[in-house]
Length: 157
Image (cartoon, rainbow, N blue to C red):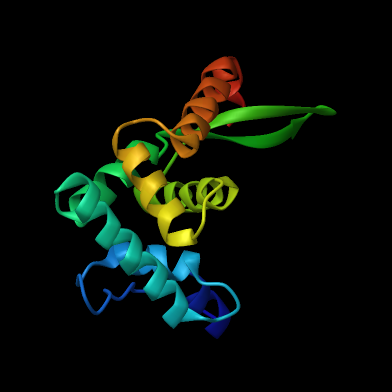
């Protein structure tokens, strides 16, 4: 076994963040970060968490978990060429990959929102996702509809 194959197959351990001691928050910070500015990403996420606590009077971690759970897809589609045609084949999502997709979609929805700061947009999107509304939840539902429509091609897998 070569060095490269042993490194590629290893999953990276995700550390927890310093304040909430939570891996999910750290994953969110890492995805929010642009150009290596991690302290700015921490500042944004912590401000968003503070605002979630003020608005909902609930633990922001539970709201965040509920939001990610609401956006996490069960199935997605992969493209596969069969005999000159490309088919969208529904595939079940591994939980870790689903969580990563949920965080990515939430951040894309945050960036598309209009608002003053990223912290405000992030907190609003998280609260919306926890209530099962918002752009990220619509994205998940759209992906599920596409997978459902292409269920006939599942045998190509």
